[in-house]
Image (cartoon, rainbow, N blue to C red; front, side):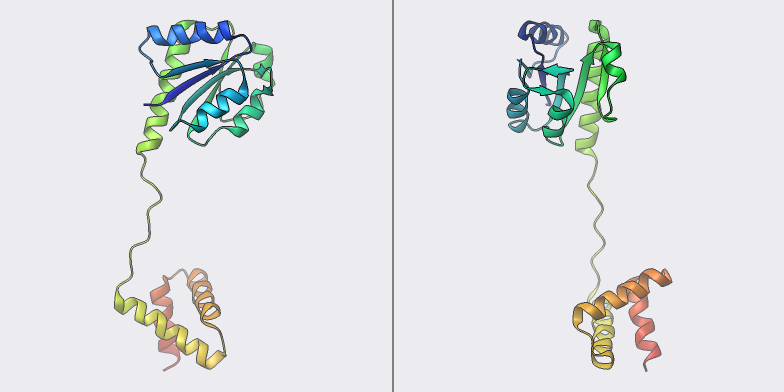
Length: 182
């Protein structure tokens, strides 16, 4: 489960927000009154939300955001005038005064998004080439190395460039090089 870190200049404000979230079923919540403490707690966690005010005693919200691990999102609670000054697009915002149902709803949405991102599969890896395909590429590189006096990496880059320029995959390009040089 994701952690919720609440950081406000007045610890009582942080504790009040923590109580609202506790009453609505959220358990892993830390209330603090400094950005440095919030950062330390975030670095020890697997991900979650940092709910904070516009300015903490030791740091501005934008500085805090810059120090957070990638697995954390930020929810900024500030006056409507301060929210208009916000320049970071990835930060969720709530205007003061905060109503408990708005807070709970926003936190729930953010946590669902975090869970979705955790489940999202990584970048697909290219499929492994067969031995025959790899042999074709190696033969084309060897031909280029011999005839054009290229190193292996230069020959590989040349095949890659031709491949990108022609819109063919690497194996097709290597086959064309071998066909033209028979």
